[in-house]
Length: 295
Image (cartoon, rainbow, N blue to C red; front, side, top):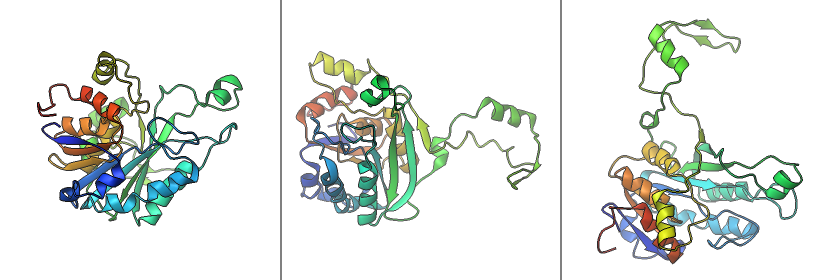
């Protein structure tokens, strides 16, 4: 427990349907989560396998929708999987996202791609050994909502202008007029300084932290770190984009609690649910100085 949030131990489907979460219904501004990926093999963190995962994930829709504020969002990260023993990608990830979105009557506001250039080459057999594929370095994030226009503001996630744009703003002039695409660029279209550039839906963020406080804490406490952690910058991007300070963020598959730590840093309230006690124990390393004595 921290000043802004709390991590609950238990199965997320059971807790979301219980009286424990009833007081948060209709108050969650953002569900940001990365469910166990639909792999074709069982992992320690409790993933379902094959088509059973599609049904399992879709069943969370009603539980999560009832938690949302009227203008709230669900952002779900989903990695890729491969057909066992073959250099062929599985479509389970796409089927899972589509089933979750369609069966729960959610709007797909936008698809994002997280590209991790530091990811190790995989699948190793096809990339490193036989050399018949390139490394799989991205995951999808689907931004969904029960309404067409959920709360969002891209002014809160502006990026630094490129050197070329900074030079253009300094010069105050450029080649206006028609383009081969038949677009016509006005004389002042790009001369207003908005404080930064609007980011694209492809987010390139390396995940290379070996000595961050979380991993140091896990080593010191002899706790096995969660094997599928995302960079905190990824969670912060969506929390800043889709919520305001004081809003409530929920992660039903907390893992190492990256979402909670990002929300805490940004002054948002948060709730996280995790079934593995050792992952909860390790997550305390993300909150140095923020944990309350009663935790």
